[in-house]
Image (cartoon, rainbow, N blue to C red; front, side, top):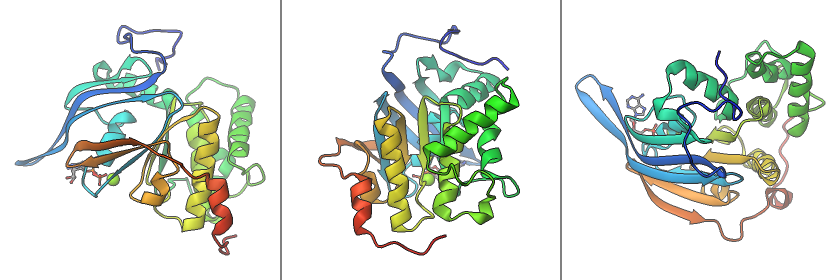
Length: 263
Ligand code: ADP
Ligand code: MG
C-alpha cells in the first residue's frame, strides 16, 4: 500500500497553508437512487485549522453525515474540491483514498462498532495492522492510546464487559492509535446517557487541549457548546458558522450531573 505521508509529497499536493487541515471548496454531492437524484450537499465551502474543535449541527437529512463521509474520505464529492492536510482528495484513486484515510483520519460513530469477541487492546490494535510495525510496538501504541482515554485498566475486557461510555472510549482510543490529523465523530453520544455524554466531551476537550483537531456531529445543543465553533447545516448548505462564547468545561459541568449506576 502506498502510504501518503508528509515526507513523500504526491503530485496531488498543493499549497494550502500548513495550519489548514480541512479545505472544502464549493462541494456538491448527489446520490442517484433509480430515477431520483438527491442533492445532499449544495455548495459547501469551509476551512478548518489545526487545533480547532468544531461541532456540526442541523436537522435530520440536512447533510451532516454526507459531509462527514466526505471529510473522512469514505465517499467522494460529486463536484468541488477537498484538500485534507494539503492533499487534493478529489484526485485520489480508491486505493490512495484508503491509505490516506488510514493515516490521517480517526473515526468515532454512534454505535461504537467494536468487534465483540475481541479485547479492548486488540480492538485498538486493529488499525495499526496496516502499518509495518512489530507486534510489540503495535501493542505498546494500543495500550498508550487506551491510557489516553482512561482505560489503561481495561485492556483485556471484551466490549460486553464494558459500559456504553467505556465502549465509546475504546472506540476513541482506536480512532487515535495511528495519530490522525483529525478526529471525526458522528453522533458519538447518541447512545449514551447525559452524564456519560459529558464524560465523552471531557475526553474530547482534553484531546483538543493537546492539539487534536476534532469535528463532531451532534443534534444536541448542550453537547455542541463544548466545541469551540458550531456549524449549522440546513438543506445541504451551511447556514451558520459561529464561535462558541463562554464554552463550558465538561470536567466542571459533570460535577453537577448525578452519577448513574453504570459498571
Ligand atoms: P443527516 O446526517 O444530516 O441526517 P444525511 O447526510 O444522512 O443527513 O442525508 C442527507 C440527504 O441525503 C437526505 O435527504 C438523505 O435521505 C440523502 N442520503 C443520504 N445518504 C444517502 C444514500 N446513500 N443514498 C441516497 N440518498 C442518501
Ligand atoms: Mg446523520
